[in-house]
Length: 283
Image 1: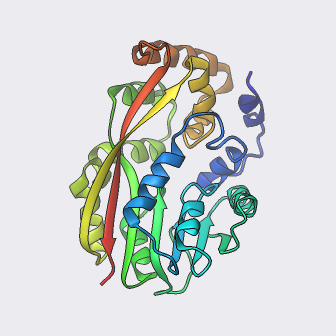
Image 2: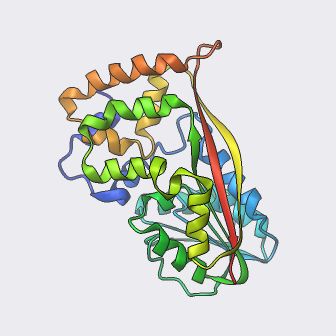
């Protein structure tokens, strides 16, 4: 049994999204797979923060977007990060201090109801967050109210993926409760299934000048065991936790057989993914 699986055997696991991300905090974005960092940097570039601006990173994790945002706005600006996971907030705070960024504060708060002052920010960013929320439209409307007139809001979500992603997800499907099935299929059939679908959420939230920018990201895993380590280090851990411990080794072997189809000429596993950046302006 891996360390991750052993830790998971506790019956005292915190529930919900916050609990999952508390449990991955030690390894999140730290297993040698450039993934969240490049995706977050793409969002920061698309939002083009300027020196002196006040920026908010919703669902900041360990700071993949928060730190570049803080660097971009400089000492005359300020960056606030919020996350529902206390351990992620602690990690982001430590990272900001290590980078000698004095214009950063990080708070535990709910992305769906941040509880921050309306009109207080020039830029609001949320990288790979919105699809976790039970009411994305309401969340976006709330986020837009946090912006001053003319402020920019941007999010990253997943666009089309290499078929191998869906094939691996299908390995877990028999074990997933309905709420996880809904969250996964919404990315294929709901508003997150197309650029137009996400843009419609922005328009319904009252945002203007709505546009989409796309980029490709390739997760490169050294080997099959590296994929297993990666899969426990982020939100996919929630899928593993739905599989009874006695069946996890069989699920792992089945996933490995699927992933052999993604092995490149270099021997590594390549998982291609399009990332969608949706951007809008507050009226």
